[in-house]
Image (cartoon, rainbow, N blue to C red; front, top):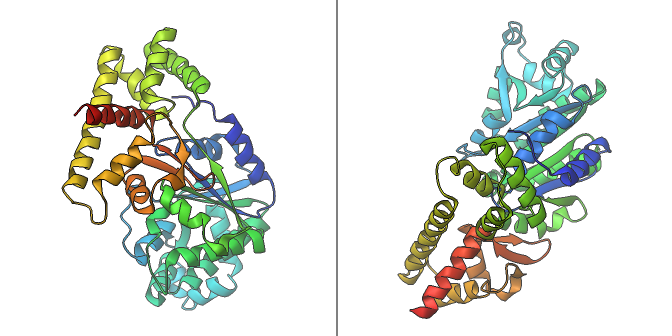
Amino acid sequence: MKFFNREEEIREIVSIIESEPNFIYFIYGPINSGKTALINEIINNRLDKDRYVVFYINLRGIFISKYEDFIEVLFEEYEESFIDKVKRLFLSLIKDSPEVIKSFLITKISGGVLDSIPIPKNTLREILKNNEVKNVFRYITNILMEIKKNGKQPVLIIDELQKIGDMKINGFMIYELFNYFIDLTKELHLCHVFCLSSDSLFIEKVYNEAMLNDRIDYILVDDFNKETALKFMDFLSDEILNKKLSNDEKELIYSYVGGKPILIIKVIDKLKYERLDVILEFMLKDTLSKLKKLLINVKNKKFEGIEYENVIDALKLFMDKYEIDEYLIDEDTKEFLVKRNILFLNPIEGTLKPQSFLIWSAIKRLLNEYQMG
């Protein structure tokens, strides 16, 4: 399927990449709003592959429980016949790489997008043995500097960075990583760094982290507004159904799922074999059922410290509003509803809203049943 819209966000990110690295950028937004699709469109189709070398590290779907897991995701090992003969290879790479190795690495990194950082097998083993983060960072910096010396701009992108948020090695790994990113961007101006996350509680922690003040900026990738959502429906109906939807059909779809791209795709795709009203009602009932089960568990004290009446009172705030001030809900209830992807927190704007129109519709229907009951 062709990429749709997001030209404003694309212009902003491409403009950043074309400038000197100065900040760490966090690309954030509600779940399934299209953050990963956006960054993939940019790095695969909007950048000159002769000018940029992009390392795109996607942590989605990867089990990471310890430091070694993260390191193994970062790197891809390669073997050369001469490497085993070079006993001091590790120190050489860390301090001042021999030209033959530099040339080999640059040949491997000729431009475009890579999903890992190349590293000699023996070197990775030594890094893991010593368990020192600084050696990992030193090696990566060496690679990035060689890329820059060869006339290309390195770009580092980590998707779903929150997956290492609680990992510890001599303190929290994430703080070591942030310090390193600051070094790459604000200090050395060596490499662009972008971090993607749908975890708005993680973004809140980042936003409130004093060490990142004036060193980080944020790019919101939100669900489509109504005008764009209706155009997206036209685009999809042509692509998938080979026909146009009526204005009434598009308005009905929007009233249920709003501008959530993945949900609009789901609806249009199902229209190949099912009636629109049946599709939308099933999606709402499914979402409502999950919300009810969550509340039953809250009522039955399955979640320590979470009060049923507090959750109901929080949801009532969305009866007539889609977006509210985050401080209208107590911290424990807010964190509970955000963690379970009922609400999306935007800490930069200080607001809360349902993760989708579908959840909003489910909340309103649930509360109507609650009042009637």
